[in-house]
Length: 482
Image (cartoon, rainbow, N blue to C red; front, top):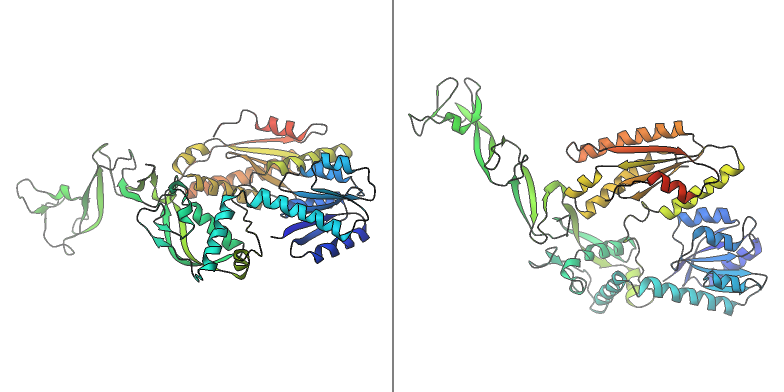
């Protein structure tokens, strides 16, 4: 496993030295970038996946400790702090850094620091992670048994209707759908390559593949329906259900109720262009019933267009996957939190605080906006968890595509989006928000049979002197529960 590294150092010679050391340890470290200032490094940090930061205490625009305050470093981010002075050691370890180095330091001391960082990362992200453990087992299983293609096996009692050897057997029935996520993530990380086998639809609530499909009434949802052919009489153009053409006096013959002629030959006198449905529960008649799927596992009853479509693949191991199987690399999958980017309030809060501080130094206009989707929970009731996430992600993409690149958007929760408009007054922000609202309403209506999205926008100027959290709280107060 290689750690993605970032160097933050205003000293050019020091940066070059660290770059060389990282290159000498390329089996453990990968240099993603280096920055001369803390502000530049912050932008780089939030755009890339960083595991380890080499951070000089003495930067030109801020101290290393101020930088750590900005990123709110967690146990997932390792920091090796260094300085030419030795009086920062106590403060460094109070911040929970991985290691503190006093310049100049030896190559052996550098190796000790990166080994400590690697060990911490392994403990935090790998060996406590079920998905990574299971994938490692699968890769070792394929390698030791010389399995060229890991193929899914059709099994009637399996939740997905398929199982993957070694993987599915280590998952409980209710968690068997995790196999698809693990294998898909492994393919994205170039550990496996997938080959299409089958596509299938799963329950959007529990991911079960076995469902009962039937037609239902669009008015009352009853499945107690009676069908009847729709008759079109050519001579007089009368169209009606077959029962209209039944004659009480002449059983077995069809007589047109409009022109009283006999209907004898289909294709000559008449045809049957469609079928009429009559609901035996509410007595409504209609031509287009709703097709619904009732899950045999959890009992949810869902319209078929709201089911979750999944792809079943067979998988081959890549060279990188073989390295993992042989212990040369460590499995490290990420990305199981599918809305982490969409709902990254920590980053939004930091950028908002930076804007507040910028307003205190210059006469500028920055605006914050909120759009709350009041009736989105009603739509969520019809869809499962995965489709809810897909919808939120799609709304997020629509928003980010329609705001300037200098601006920022984030979902505060599943029904509330926040937007930050730098260097724009409330008038310009309102125009952008209105345009986005129209687009989102059309998107939802087009994909969910005319569902009318109820939006509640609110736009406020960002005030200097206020805290980011206070502004966000005021904007999202009286939030509905989802």
